[in-house]
Amino acid sequence: MRRMLSCRFLQAAVLVGLLLALALTVRAQAAATTGLGNAVCPDAELLGPKLITDICWSCLFPLRIAGAPIGGGSVPSGASDQALCACPDPAGLPSPGVVIGMWEPARIVELVRVPGCMPSLGGARLDLGAFRTLGTPGQAEYDGSDKAFYNYHYYAFPVLVMLDLFFPDRCNVDHLTDFDVLYLSELDPTWNNDELAFFTNPEAAFVANPIAQAACLVDAASATTVQKPLDELFWCAGAWGGLYPFTGRIPTLNGRPSEMSLASARVLAALHRRGLARQTVGDEALCEAPFALMLPKAQYRLSQFYPLPEANSNHVIGESELRWGMWRNIPGVGEDHLYLIWRWHDCCLSWL
Image 1 (cartoon, rainbow, N blue to C red):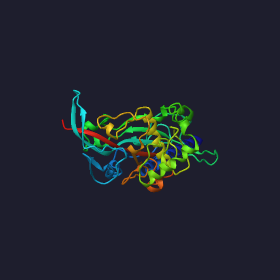
Image 2 (spheres, rainbow, N blue to C red; image 1 turned 45 degrees about the vertical axis):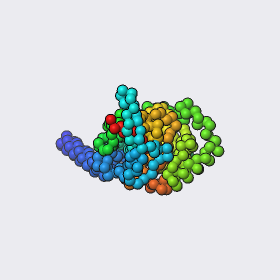
Image 3 (cartoon, helix red, strand yellow; image 1 turned 90 degrees about the vertical axis):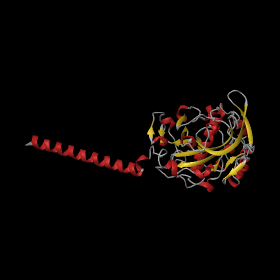
Image 4 (spheres, rainbow, N blue to C red; image 1 turned 90 degrees about the horizontal axis):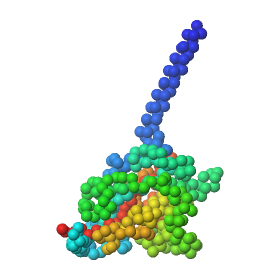
């Protein structure tokens, strides 16, 4: 009798365990369907319908052909205003052409709390870091933290080339034709260490003073009121704060969208310093993309793709979040951010 009761008790326990496991599986699937189960590493759904619906396609304009604008919008300071041009052909002979210029969606910057989390790739996880590289939004209740820290992933995202939309091969200076990972901050020791970062940008010592930082108020006013960041103030990121150091430790003085935009600007500045990003604006960029060791702020615009997309607009470096999206953050499931990087592209389109 005891053996029969023991067997029945064991069978009941197994049945209860199976039912519990089934219930947890169904609950997890339902949470994944609604997006609530992806708080640790969400899926940004980049390669899907949002590729069409959540990108500001009107931000491509104005398209300038031979100096004549098509469509509304602003042109960055320093853009080429020439009508005709000439670039050397493979034989070294000058080949005449016409100058075209446009805003090009070219890169994705992904800012994440968990090392190796890839929201752009469907929430995939890579073994890229340990606890020392975990991100934090800052302003913790007990540790007195006053800085946020996020890892970043930098992707090639030549949407116009991928969709074969009015972007000639001659103007593809990067020779990138597909979505691809270009840089992972978890493998860069300077991103989470201010002292190491100083050796890659020692000029930070010359702008770390109250006078230089006060000058950033002028950059903030220009970026916010007329959407013209000042390249002369290379150490400023307008209303977002100081551009130096080139690390992921961001002061939590503004809202989360400003913090993440500042981190994205630092990513671009660090890559320019290392020669991994080029200048694409101006007369000198018509035939090739020269090195620009200082960030050409006017060349770029940013639009948030995740969690709340800027589907109808974008913003310049340093523009106050009060104008474009201090509300673009969702606690819990929307604390990782994706930014689409736009750059103005001047190009000499040869006739031959």
